[in-house]
Image 1 (tube, rainbow, N blue to C red):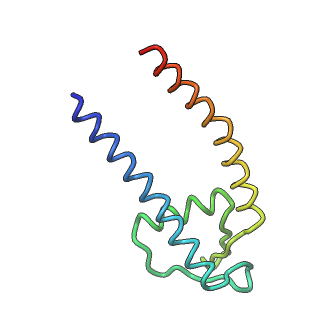
Image 2 (cartoon, rainbow, N blue to C red):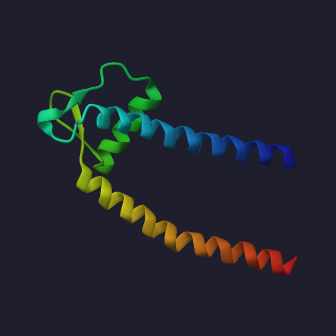
Length: 108
């Protein structure tokens, strides 16, 4: 049983890493093309299914904008706002996790 939970943890970590890297690849392509407005937007003609899904999610979050002709650009203001939200959540969650781990350590 212990081995299967370790494997599940490793798989979960790898998926998290894959998601983060996929987002970075999509954003890097937009930054490299300087796609920061509808005038400088670019197309993504060939993306594998993982990158296509991450692109859709970034559009839903508002980090990336899309026009009617399937051209994309970075919405820097929304991206910064979303980053601030994520950092605020992390600032709340991380101390709670540390307290939890410390209490477990002190109990045992």
